[in-house]
Amino acid sequence: MNIDWYIVLSALLFATGAVGILIRRSPMVILLCLELMLNAGNLALVAFSRMVGNQQGQVFALVVMVIAACEVVVGLGLIVALFRRKLPLDVDELRELRG
Amino acid sequence: MEAALFFGAAIGALGGAIGVVAMRNPFYSVLALIVHLFSLAVLFLLLTAAFVAAAQVVVYAGAVVVLYVFVVAYVGSGGESAWEPIPGQRLLAPLLGAALFIELSIAALSSSLLALSTHGPHVNPGFGNPAAIGRLLLERFLVPFEASSILLLLAAVGAVVLAGRKKGETA
Image (cartoon, one colour):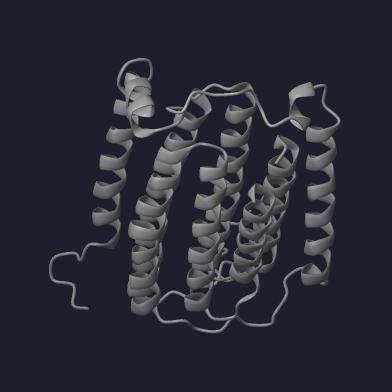
């Protein structure tokens, strides 16, 4: 398969994740949609690294994976802390910091 | 053969992504994410990125998804309210997503990267295997590698501080 197919697929997955962040309210599902967007970026990185014939893009994709894992850990910790304090798990109701 | 694998994995990845967005129950969203991640691992293998594919399966499908399942089981899967702070948000968002997709595709495909419509250059059999990636990680990218390990440690400590119980607090 040509590389442009992979790039278009990665754009489609990124757009799907962005739509998910816009329409969902549960912070857990929003974290999942962030994962989708990061994975779409990873797919583009690996595809470009294959296009150039250089493995450094794959190392970059691995670093992105590490960042995604950190983000999941902190995000889920926040969700558990919210749940403990009996706060609503809804991003539209958690609006105290809004200006 | 390669085209069949690509389209099968692409349909799996896209279907999984749409499942994550569309499922009402967060538990089903996590299950859809597993389909998505495995399909992406197949795509990585097609791009001769064996180590990235293995890390994808082990890190995501192994660790991250298990973490999600635990938290969904702990918090419970409450339904979302139908209240919309911005009127028409659910209709507007897919339109914006489609616009984003078209824009990204135009940006990528109309660039002057001539190699985009090729298979990429011929590569040696060892391209992207654990040995090659490990050598890159420990020689050329040693500092980013160590920095990401410190970041992981910080994230683990932060999660314990965030979710840990204070003294005297009862669950």
